[in-house]
Length: 421
Image (tube, rainbow, N blue to C red; front, side, top):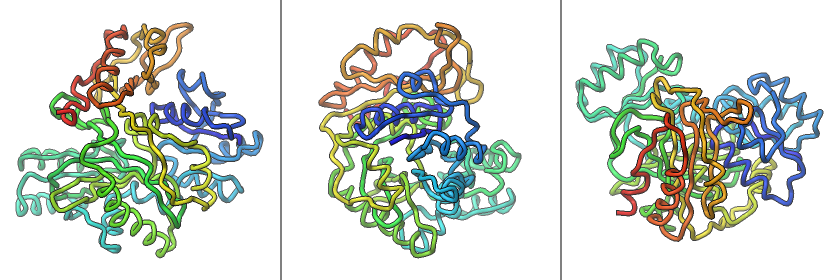
């Protein structure tokens, strides 16, 4: 198969690594890609927001499958456009992608199909939102309704924090995404990112991880796109996985099909495992970042035919095998992230750690300046360690990070530590 992978982050690099192992792969193209992906694929200067340009490239290069990494092109209807041109794509239609594009829509779907989730209310003006807030009290979760690059969620422990979050959203800090605000009950439990592959009718669990959203150690500081992840998660065993599939994933897939908006692609269920069982925090409609970097290295099956089956509507519900190894992924971000990341610093030492066994480096925000590797984003690198236990996997990841020479880099030193304890 000829495959076009759209995106430029650590998630896409992890996908490229998995796809490159497939005996079914003929050629892999990536747009725009990054220096890490460039070792695995032919990079293409495509504007992925230009649907006509993407479909023209696919026809010119006889692309058999387009894999869309991030949420924005899905919400914008790229899959719909490609389908109209007779081009297969892995990912949901624009209507189905509203599960991530609008948190209010996701709540409506949960209510319609009796999917367990936190109680919430939505508001389009700050005054009404604050009235509801004062009636409910804190702690409470304040969410921008639309896409906000993983940063439009504030877990407010006090009324003052919640009011400040409402003011920030109503003043345009998150653009159009914050025009509608959701106030949501704060769930108590263990958070899990659960991945399921779907073809519109069928679904099968792919894997799960736990993300570390906060910038600082001990889960302090602002929410980010994710500072690290580990897989598997101690609280998610086969019994709990079966409950997630039976109580959330399958009802969602059946319900979306029933309403005429079938969901195909990767369903990312953000879960809280509470005392009464799994409840939905949010849905995403694509591979998560950095969870993908921790889950895919554990995959013991060829990824490419699984993604093609989702696009073709031929997905088997046979369980997908995963290795017994544990994975810990640590995100290296630039100083100033998430608000004003420092760009332009040179990164040295990757050659040493790329040769280490059971260590994977994925690029998330880098570029080449001649022979130099330069930081060019907020989250810049991901380092994943693999070993028999989470403790040993953590040790591998952090030993590798110690060999990187990048003065502008910051990272958490406690990824996976709570699970080990």
